[in-house]
Length: 107
Image 1 (tube, rainbow, N blue to C red):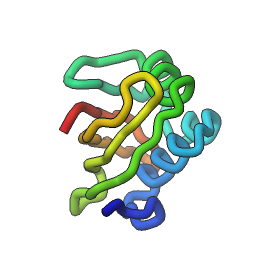
Image 2: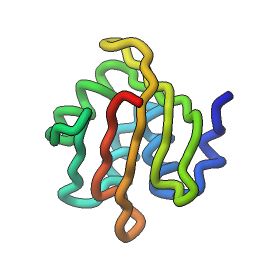
Image 3: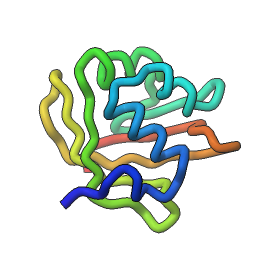
Image 4: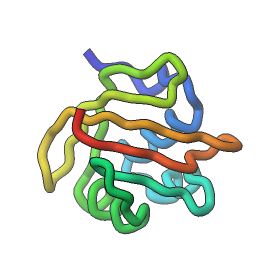
């Protein structure tokens, strides 16, 4: 059973997931703070390169399974054309209403 995006409690996290799921590069860029950073399975990655490869050019999509009480952590079924589907964990740092860091990896 997945959680509807509109039920995500943190507005920046909700905007991140909406932009990712609709493939909206402009909306995705707008939700990230200047200089935002990220990691995948514990290794820091270049945000622009990673998001282009893992989200936009491979039709990435998240179905949210659960969120943490603070709204900054998600468990999601993530799929894209490159890797197929996998259960993933996402953790967000939000500052000033923008995502300044996100971390993802297999859950």
